Length: 174
Image 1 (cartoon, helix red, strand yellow):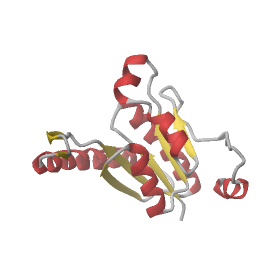
Image 2 (cartoon, rainbow, N blue to C red; image 1 turned 90 degrees about the vertical axis):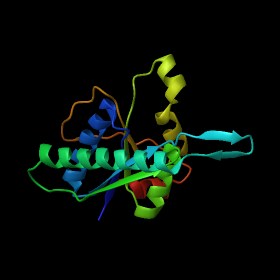
Image 3 (cartoon, rainbow, N blue to C red; image 1 turned 60 degrees about the vertical axis):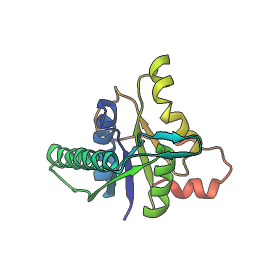
Image 4 (tube, rainbow, N blue to C red; image 1 turned 60 degrees about the horizontal axis):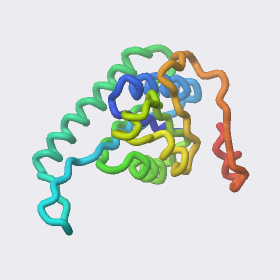
């Protein structure tokens, strides 16, 4: 069965992207993985060693587990009719593109869905540009969902390629 990975940071834009990405999963009868990648607060006791307190990690993980399960429940309640994709929830510590690329190898992902954020200089500087890094580093088709995209069934998707691996690119279209 096909699987769509939907990345979330629980922001309003990411939640919108999750709802948007849920439609093609229902349309093509694919399973969904809701994936949250998060950074761990790091303390630097010595220049050569970075550590974080385990209690903070456990608290962050519990909070993220709760949030991703709540998102799963909201998707299932909001779209009860028709095919119901199986939804798995995953939380991992690390950089977004690293976590997602690892998930694509473990779970044979067909499509990655992420929300875009409003581009202003300060927020891009503080949070970084996840969309740009995903475009540069992902190894699967990527669907970027802008905040104002209408939450309708998907009718058309543009597919861009650099033509380096045309046979693999064509296999990715479903």
